[in-house]
Image (cartoon, rainbow, N blue to C red; front, top):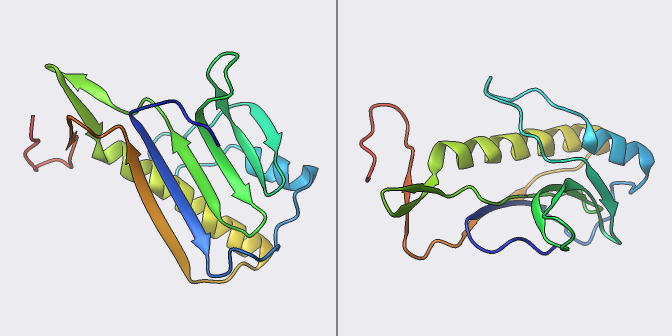
Length: 154
């Protein structure tokens, strides 16, 4: 999927067999993916968007940037049972320094992993999983917004 450049967090959970086909890519599954979910940690619910798409290997819910083919944010459920998410523009400027907010990124990961657990329960997807968190556009940026009591670098 094409994302907007710079400042995005991408989280991918891959099942042990990424060649499997355990999730039906149909209307019922798309409705399940599009459901609003309560935050797994009591924080705000993530809004992925209202655009729904199907690809040859996944169902996607998200928001695009204007008429471009780039996604501002999205949540995808793959046929193999893995979940992928991207949240663009998660970098904040603080006194000329670009800061990736750690608490926000961890919260996004928590949402994605909670959805992955729900998918496992729904379609019998089995562990193990490989989870990757990638930050795009980190050149000249720093990590900040740590938990209370931890000194931020900026």
